[in-house]
Amino acid sequence: MITTPLVDEVSRFCDEVVRPRAGEFDAAGAIPASVIGQMAELGVLGATLPTEYGGAGLDPLAHGELTETLSRACSSLRTLSTVHLSLVAQSVLRWGNARQKRDVLPDMAAGRRIGAFALSEADAGSGTEWMSCSYRKVADRYVLNGAKKWISFAGLADLFLVFARDADGAGTTAFLLERERHEVRTTPIDHLISTRASHLAEVVLEDVVASSADIVGVEHGAGRFVAPYALDHGRFSIAWAGVGLAREALATMVDYARERRQFGEALTAFQLIQALIAEASCKAHAARALCVEASGLRARRAQNATAMTTMAKHFAATTAVSVCNDAIQVHGANGLSTRYAPERLWRDARSLEIIEGTSQIQQTLIARYVVSSPDQLFPARSPARQDAP
Image (cartoon, rainbow, N blue to C red; front, side, top):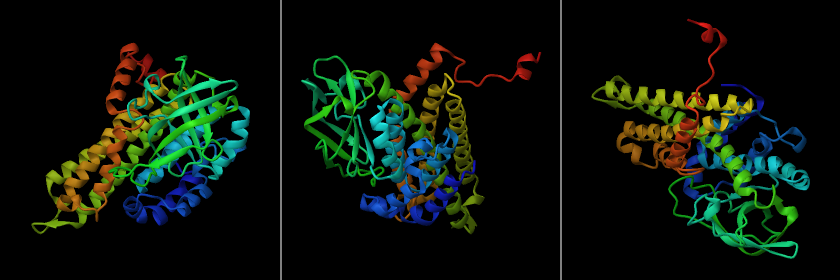
């Protein structure tokens, strides 16, 4: 692991404050404002933003380590980082206008305003071309109507990056809306099994009036530019989240197997338990290796960075589910109890195969990348290797 001061501080924060209360947050379906405030004070909410906006300027690998650390302690808190920073703040940084960057990014970095990514809809998922949320232009204003569903942290967000289709069919536009100024309403969504403390809500827009100054990017350009860019950053975060959950489940599995005795011996003495531990370890390490590779490519802005990020997201998500499932198996009946961590870890891991594009969507994208250029997902050989007979 790399060691940056921020990652070290967040690791201590997670060990002392977050992990001991993760089950409590899950049961309550909310994260206390005081915990989010501490997270903001540490600099997590602006971790990747440039220092000129109050951020820490972390590179992709350091940000991945940070995300992994948060995910190991509490998936709901990690979700805040993914949505607020990777999906919203990064999109404003890349596509926002000068006023949005100046006025919004410092507040987001300091946690004074929380962002939510309002793309998904009940009948359209994340497909911009099929969404029903729309706007019509009236003089120099844009009037938005529709609803967004499954929006993480919408329940307490101050800012919403909303995607809406032009009612005339010209394309999709992204708007940065403020809860109070634009009168955005939210309705909580409960009865969840995964990331229960992520303040999930439906976002309702009823004759919401926006101006051209609220557009992120260019009008009709959100489907081609803003949404794909945001989802790429989101998938990178989810990939590292999968590594974090897999590592936490592995550690929980090993700790329990060392302590639990059966037939007079610790569970670690039995070969079938050893097999589960070995396979989980290999998968977790392989997932992390993919994430490290993707981090390096992103830092270099390599052409195949998005392809590797997609592969990392898919493999890390499926790995997290598999390892968490094995952790439940090692725990036996205790693995089905809410008094033990594995069942919560498994529930949180399960959502990773759905959010930011399902595993099936990732498989389709990976296949397209490979078919178009079979070698692009493999690192280039070193000069010495190329010269070898």
